[in-house]
Image 1 (tube, rainbow, N blue to C red):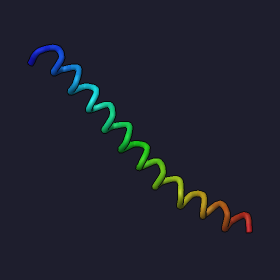
Image 2: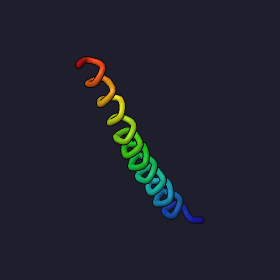
Image 3: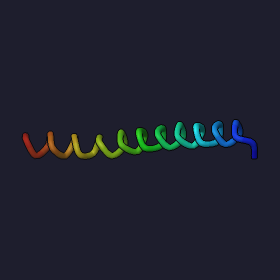
Length: 41
């Protein structure tokens, strides 16, 4: 592969990785917030 192809590939990997981690973090955050609210009440 030429260098521009490698740069595009790496940038795509970074974008996809960040999107997946942000989605997973949001899904993981909801149950903990609900559990903490229930425990406070």
